[in-house]
Length: 264
Image (cartoon, rainbow, N blue to C red):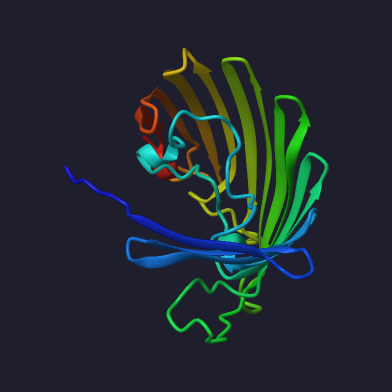
């Protein structure tokens, strides 16, 4: 069996401008390549950022888990995003505003350029992305996230992709519950077998004590089209977490039926 490790190094700095606004910047090297960069100027309620792999995004899940999300265990199709690329993950402009207990955010990426050496190069490969979202708390213990991302085609021969998400979570005492749904439209009028078009997530956790936590996740990914390569994919996972102070240990078991929408 294979083994693997991931290494990360992050460098960051922050300060205050003469007009009272704050500024911060950072970059992260992951396994030898820069995969995050950010420069952000912000005030009490409004922030403006330029960077990659940074900022608020719809490509996350707010439901509770003990350890990783379940799709990492089996490589299932029902994960946290289905667009060709993600606006927050490439070079983009991000604006966020605090609205009481909520945050509204917009990300705009002019193309799918990531981070590369000599990145003053202004080559545009086309196909812009726009992401909008609203997240926060509507009452004690209840959090939500709703949002949409739209990918414009690089030229007239392509299709416009749209992904939407609706999420809610609740925590009280030792229990936490969560549910979310993702709807994906690839812009193609043809129902292609094996293409995920909707995913539902259900999850719950229970803190047995300060050291031990239990979790369960259930994910169903619906497929376009018909036939043996268009079956709904269903993943169930259970996990156990043990807190050792500065170190945590996680054990997960997961099983996926019709992996990648293929029968059995």
